Length: 115
Length: 112
Picture 1 (cartoon, chains in turn yellow, purple):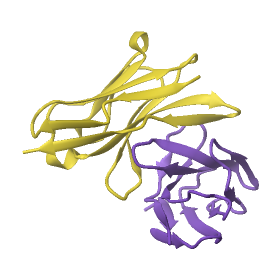
Picture 2 (cartoon, one colour):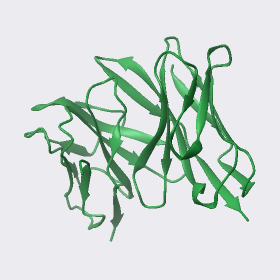
Picture 3 (cartoon, helix red, strand yellow):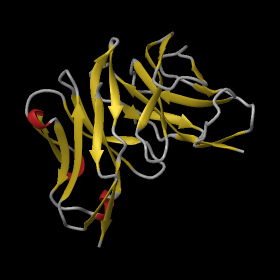
Picture 4 (cartoon, each protein chain N blue to C red):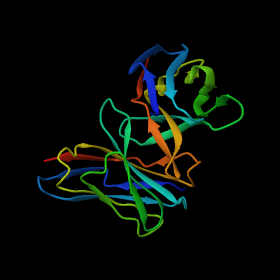
């Protein structure tokens, strides 16, 4: 069965430090991969996506992610954290299912950024 | 600006009552989705619709119902059969099955 695992429900970094949020998936078919960000009491905003082509994907707000097929991973990184990056981040994968691409979400990682 | 509008932002339900959550999009997207979000969990799919007058059950459809009479609208009814309705409900849409889903700002439903 397809699944998504986000390692670490809470991650805390200092402002200016590297942000690394981990995502692993299991799938028998090549997936599409997404990272979304959610601020309190708001919906999800797409950060970046991988469908085909270049495995290093750049998104909004300075985030990027690399698809590593051999490791079944799609980790999200940002070189220097900003206070405004504090939010919850969701990794999601999309698989063909019954005529539409079913989106499966990880449980989320809450990122805290401290001065 | 195009987007997805969910209303109301907060909703309270009495025991035995049905309530309807509104979702409207002006993105001209064919596909629409309803998700439920609980603390510490990811989003779980309730229902989805790929075209007007057609919809399919998701992973947790019991106690919920939907309709898709217009392309831009996909209301969700939380029925009295849903025994644990307290959650954050998110509506989404996409142009087609290969495109990312865009989300509304959600409705928080609580029990009185």
